Amino acid sequence: MQIENKQAMEAITAGPPAYRQYARQWLASNLPEHMRSDSLAYRTPTLEECRTWEASMYSAGLAGMTWPKTYGGLGLTLREHLVVNKEVGALAMPESVSSIGKELAGPIIQTVGTEEQKQKFLPRILSMSDFWCQGFSEPDAGSDLARLRTKATQEGDQWRINGQKIWTSGAAKAHFCLLLTRTGTVADKHRGLLMFAVPMNTPGIRVVPIKSIDGKESFAEVFFDNVLVPDSARLGAPDEGWNAAIRVLSIERATNRMYRPWRFECELRQLIAACKSDTKLHALLQDGYYQRRIGELVGEIDAHKGLVERTVEKMVAGEKIGAQGSLTKLYWSECHQAFMGLALSLVSHVNPLSSPLARRARAHFTTGYLFARAETIYAGVTEVQLDIIAQRIMDLPKDL
Ligand SMILES: Cc1cc2nc3c(=O)[nH]c(=O)nc-3n(C[C@H](O)[C@H](O)[C@H](O)COP(=O)(O)OP(=O)(O)OC[C@H]3O[C@@H](n4cnc5c(N)ncnc54)[C@H](O)[C@@H]3O)c2cc1C
Image 1: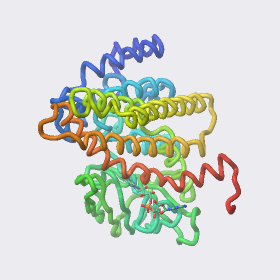
Image 2 (image 1 turned 180 degrees about the horizontal axis):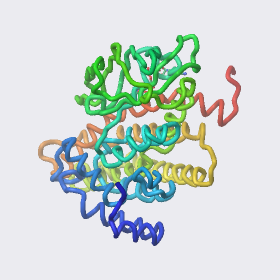
Image 3 (image 1 turned 135 degrees about the vertical axis):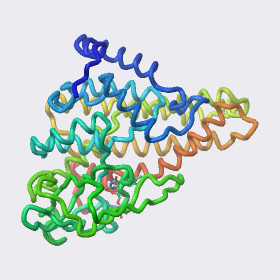
Image 4 (image 1 turned 60 degrees about the horizontal axis):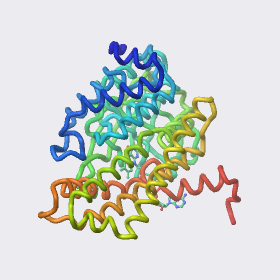
């Protein structure tokens, strides 16, 4: 499907300022009030509501910015991707329910997939017809992914898959799994890894939801018991799995959810508006401690914006970002986790007699605080990012 929104095409042709203006207006006038987490009308949107919303963003020319036109994208650069991301971040809208498809599976299929796979998968990701999950981590292979054991054995023109994945976000709703397997033994480490696009309704796949600290069941254990897939489900050559996985991880760390600093700023606006609406919280805002912490946060968000903008410019110029992705991952996760701690310490003073905005903020930031505990773990734990920065950016010796 090609974008047929005339207004979007005119704005894109007119250049980034016009596209930004179009994105801002379209998002503000089309995002349902009950999906804005800073609104008193907010209620947790259903999966179907989120799917419909993101499908409408796609039809409006606000998704698939960098994807080739042949596969339903807009054929633009990361600069236009960033233009839209800034506007997405500035509104308190729900997180994408298809970020693994749009930001991880899609790009890797474009890199290692066959022409047939690109035609089959990419347009359906953009139109929100298919959801994807990422089957990398295992009980004994998280930070050290090269220890993964899930085995893929070739049998004629099929592959037999046996093993277990864990922490698989969105597995229960996914139509496909971007699955990392091993064709040899664990001793082969980085060699002999193979990636697949596995339909989640294949016989032998069992999804067991895991409840997280926020009470949600957003991830799961996924068991593969003699799962048979055709050779056409293979993404890349048998020994290309590690390189493909590293590419996925570097996208995840550097460019996935580029809107983050603009979203953090939007959350900060929400927090301050809620505090100002309530006598007790307003008094706390005058406290020197909170004023200093908020001031620091504003500076950190600004630095984070600069990091994202610089990464985009480097990538547009054709530079590889490599280990720089670890810097971005470390920065946003530590910054947001600290922010959510600060927000919780303010909204914990909210009581049933507080202003409606303050009560809304308490619900939002309590959930935010709990989820932020995971931010320094997923997409690579903080300690590993520090190792990468020390060795590959700062060139420090391994053993001091
Ligand atoms: C919310 C959430 C969603 C996730 N979604 C997915 C998903 O969709 N798909 C998927 O495949 N995975 C997913 N994961 C898993 C995630 O990628 C792993 O949790 C992560 O890679 C860490 O692996 P681990 O949990 O095995 O911890 P480990 O690797 O065992 O690390 C545990 C702790 O050991 C320490 N440590 C580990 N290595 C080092 C080191 N080299 N140097 C110093 N200290 C170290 C750190 O303190 C670390 O916190 C998700 C995780 C979370 C929390």
